[in-house]
Image (cartoon, rainbow, N blue to C red):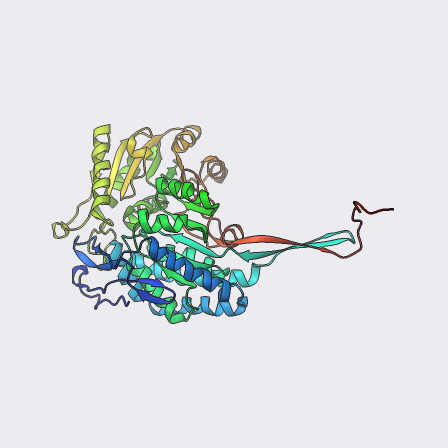
Length: 506
């Protein structure tokens, strides 16, 4: 079913969007139950459209479709032929980039200036994995003297289940779908129920690209029903999940019964550490962008900022000035820097954390939300000043535009405190002492550390975390070789080597 919007010179509340169906076996269909759920606007909290609610019977149909497509078409297709489809998807995403960006802004509340970049990155995901599969998806050979040649090949798994989040949904969907399809797997995607619009647009793109029926399927619905059925299905070989840590733990438990591979990219409480010798202007830019872009709904956001005591006062004054000037507005306005949070329940959760911060002794400093946006889920950009790392707001993931500011004195102290949290996804170190930069980066317990940089992604690197932030890695050859394929070893005898002759009469 098409997802067309009207002219986006109009404000968000005037943009009409059509209803969303499931996409199974190459066709847009209703759910078996015919049930739907309302997709609400973060900007107005009014209904944007209705979405087909998939359940177990729909997952069963999607998996059957994907398994048939894998067995009869996709796994046997030549890589060169498969890559024609993958590159065609990328080209069609480029053609639809404007509408994708608009739908994403309408659906999630993310500013359109940021969703445009995500649409471009999504096309890049497909092109990147097309090139990588063509150039690197090969095995190795091991010769054993003059007796054997042993070699490896990499085979696709089969049907893979992809469960994606609502914070940058289109880019994160394509980050999973692209390597899964490029390596020869077929896909059942369960997108977040809070952000169905661009997932539906991806189905339209893939249908237009002409992929064989069943190679790609989408079942919209809720985690407790559609998501759980996907995780438990015996014909699904792997689950890749991005989302909240508790949900990830449940998925791992439920996937264990059928011995599925799992990849978990989960929550974070990432530190940004600013030493007194840092380039403070650049560190300020990075700290502000890292927590207030994406409306603060970013797993790698620098939600804990550690400031050396000698620069704390100056840095906090600059933070306050920036927070006062952040443009809070309509997601469709190109000048907007901070939009509304995804839903009312999440809005209430973030607001509650800010209340807790005040109760725990933080000095809460906030920007302003214009009165015209009172119907939306707007949390103003917020600083939690004079925080200490043992506070609830420094230990739990808030996932909103809220920065806790913590003072430190020594390198040893800040490493210890930065690591004193259950998460370990990302970290940022700002210093002009490059030796110290490396020391601290290597000591902070996180899967990814940036030195003198904001969160920039290189598609070749392993993306993922340690501790409660996840298991496994996405990106680059880590996705291709470690998750979406399995190595197979072929042993070839090239001579008449000795074989024991049990039971042979002499």
